[in-house]
Image (cartoon, rainbow, N blue to C red; front, side, top):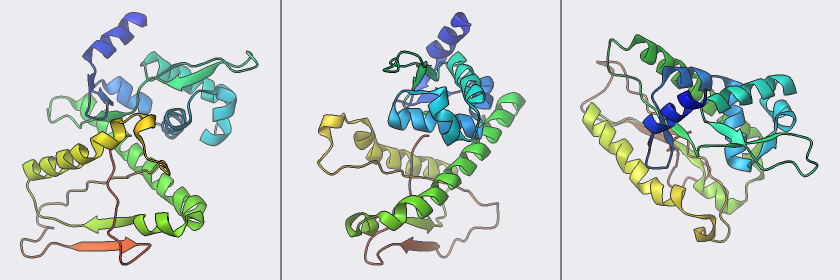
Length: 232
């Protein structure tokens, strides 16, 4: 088990945000579970936690949470964290700041293609759940300053695959300094903001060469919209 984990870690690359680039179909399948994605979110955002503490927030039992944590640990995604103050509960922490993956272009890589598509679908559903919770739990309590800069954009643009890749790279170039800076470098009044990005190429023949479609909904009509996001 240790040898396999070391091999995976040696093969793993790091993205611009320090994320692990997942290429192993087994790891993709391990991540493609709503409870595991929730557990990873909580550990990255809040730090070490026990299976008992994670269970109700992930909608599972403590024993199931413990099993999911051990499974994630077998891929080097979580690890033992600082001990609980009472010394009785095992606590876990995220071992990576995030992860990203690509759907294999190789038609012969059926296992990787299927695993990547499954993970992509699960992550999209997970992101939609985050948006729904934000709308009901957070947005109503935002003050005017933050309400003005919160929002969503839905922009259609006609590009080829290389241009779309350049757009995505440009977005990450803008975000990287903010993602990677240390806590002491953040200005007063900072808070965590989640930028959720869906990139949805339409089917052939559905685009338009004559007019770019752009629809924006925002809490303040005088404010530009947001809605882009990075790795998970």
